[in-house]
Amino acid sequence: MDTLVHLMRCSSWLAFLPRDPPFFAVSSLHFWVSSAGAFQPYKTLVAPITKDTTTSLYSTSLNFRENYIVDLGAPFSWYTCPYKRPLVTCKAPPCVSASSYLSPLCPPSSSSTNNLCQNCITTPVNPLTKTCALSDVTYKNIALYVTNGGHPTSSINLNDIYMSCAPGYLLKSLPSGATGLASLSRAPLALSTQLAPPYLGITKRFAMCLPSVPNVKGTLFFGNGPCFFRSPAMVDVYRFLSYTPLIKNPKSSNYYISLDSISIARKAVRIPRNAFSIDSVGRGGTVLSTVIPYTILRSDIYDVSSRSSRKPPRAFLK
Image (cartoon, rainbow, N blue to C red; front, side, top):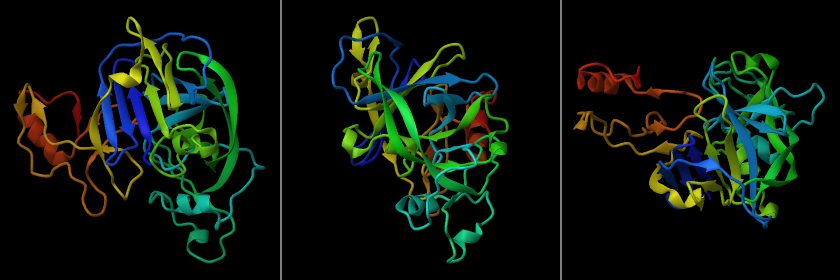
């Protein structure tokens, strides 16, 4: 089953549904959080989201005080863990999953090129500097609030959440106070997958309200919902979403959508056929990201798009 993701900039929602094929959703309704009624047995976890003015990165709070950068594409989460921490062996199932996403930005690990591997090695990457480090896989407990859709009702501890144990220098250029990075990708060790264990009955999906200004907090939901907002009457925002299919890229843990054309001032831009297709080695496609604050186009598509307007569109960057 694929992850369901709702992404909202407090004025628009984006979503991924666990269907075949999976779906991505968008809504342009305006909402603000309001409280709901008495507690009901909803299966939804909640955490706050903040925006950093310098980097435009979003952070969420785990364990109520640890700040993690939100990344839709990273294959696993990482943090600067203490010297003494539990380790994962190379033959453990989590290591097999992590080994499928080793970054080419890191040099090969000696343990991955011989049969003497003891501790599982991963390659966490700083999304801004692209710095990579060979790091152990560890696990820790994560505490989050439970919500009835309108406000927190209790808290819960989830044990043995797998993460990469990254060195402190990997935090360079990230927002002040950052502890690490929270993966919300479609990879097996993504936080969004691990926070939905079968025994809790939490649906494997999540929703985000991304704040557009730094002094306003957003919200991150894990689970079935509902997510009650007032606009002006109390509504469950999940009911106001329209959907488009997601595209799978077997070479990547990112989320992709299908993009067929570009229009500027209601005039279609002539772009090469299949310009946004994913090729046989996983290159191309249209990726959703929370760590890149602007649109990026392939050079040839950018050139055609910029020539189609009197001046280059501000959102189009090489």
